[in-house]
Image 1 (spheres, rainbow, N blue to C red):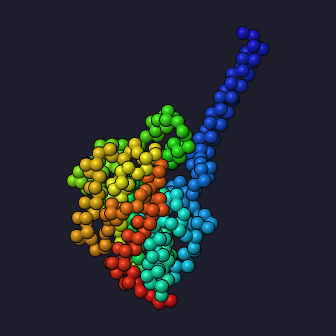
Image 2: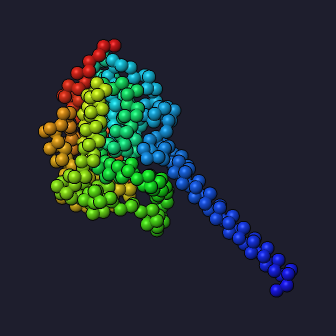
Length: 365
């Protein structure tokens, strides 16, 4: 090969390498953008509230809906004055009021009922609920911002997915590598929602898989599904439920230290009282246990806790079972619709009044 041919060949190789490096840089940049901004862009595209994508993933402020802390309603913390009956509500997407108007969500419905019973007092609700939270993260939130709302009462609404969420978040708090994985899990979850293609979903789920459980949590269920507490005997789940119970007790202690009362409410899923509802659910139907053998184990767990707990614990399962209202959830989504929120809100207000938790906080205007 002569000198000219060698130079031509060298330029050709250099150009190929430059093209390959440029392609690699472009792909890397695209992945970085998708990693850091993809989920938020997707949320905006779907018209959903935008969340931070750190471990706590709390919602961002939204004028007219969420205040500076991502709390409903859009009232500044300074609006919650000492001497008023300020109620902090802790919970996940059910407490947040997913897919219903803010005024229809059970925290605000319960607040209006209580206000009607005691018109001489100022009763304000601060709904701290947000999507996919659980007691472990709710405790972090309460410790960080709860004092600004000068609570007289803290109520916590527990969902059936909270047990598995608490284990997952506890693991992520221990391991920074898992916190990086969390962003990929958001990426997977929201693109699963966007893509109407089973082959793509299956590929993405295989690509981004849940890391194995640490040794001290291996007994939480063979596959550690979101509903492991509903899939096996209570004796098998109970050691893992302690993670959630510890967070609940810590929230109750925070309330006591802040001079507030505390109450815990256990929310049922429709499969536990009206299994024929939500016929077009393609979201959780594949995850929820097909057997009813252990569906009520968490309620038994908290029924036993009532005997020694220094705060009220109420299951809303009987309220939903005894209601003649149908349906209580959406046709294609397992979250409570306005009917479900009405049942929950009325029951919570009734229990709070029966427990004297509002009466004990009497204040004059």
